[in-house]
Image (cartoon, rainbow, N blue to C red):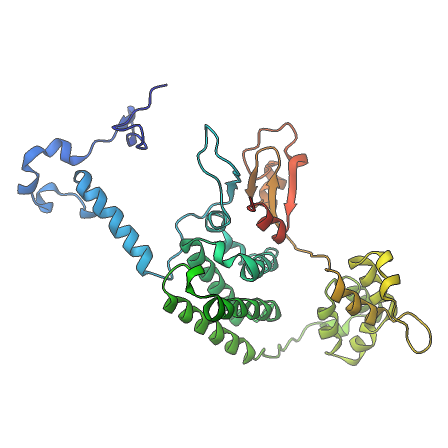
Length: 364
């Protein structure tokens, strides 16, 4: 198939759809000829922004777009997709490879933080990037990173949900920036050092706002958690997988305080997060000789990582090597796998991607 274009390196001709079919789009400069300088915009009766007078105007438009994204630090990166092809090497069909920064730019994380099922997932991913992968991001990816972070902080300040997670994220990010700016130096940072100092000041300002956050007491005339029967409150506590959430909930009422100290509750939490062979290495006994499961949990937490649970995660198709957000509603209605998969059984090729697995996908 011949490659239609002025140069084999160019993207080809531009085409427009008409009633008679697809026709090649020709620039106005080809029709106007040498009299292009004598005509005015009023005579052409065409919007100024739609005029491309040859290569000079095309270069000028590219320069304006580049200056816009360089000067506007709060602008979002212009790719917002739900899937991306994870390419680790060059092929005849695809040149280059996909990087962590490109994946972070193109996948729609700005919309994901508005979904309560994906919020914790995005926060954990940003925290892992802040710890070890911040310098590996491109300049556009770093700008997009702080844009998404700003939206997260604003969301938490507005709805007062999950402030503990954001505080941990900002603590790790501020520690990393302090090390990079003061000890390592500006040679590993992309951009002017004053930009990073300004970003660090912004992070410290966010931390102060979160520390001063006062969650108003909600007044409800309907049924509350304390109005439920004792066994229902106990069943709700047994559904928790985060120890800090259990402790915080136990501080609300005396009844929940009693239920949060249940030995069986902490035993189930230990069995969920850790293997039984790990118990013998760090056995914690109470004064009466019984196993102190609450103390054992926090002891084991120091040596072993806890299981991560998320309402929704990114999916990776092993057949197509595509990383994507899966819309559960569309998947149930239209039996759609979330991406154009060519496998006979697309669902069998899907693998949930944890935040650490997301980073490992782009380690070459």
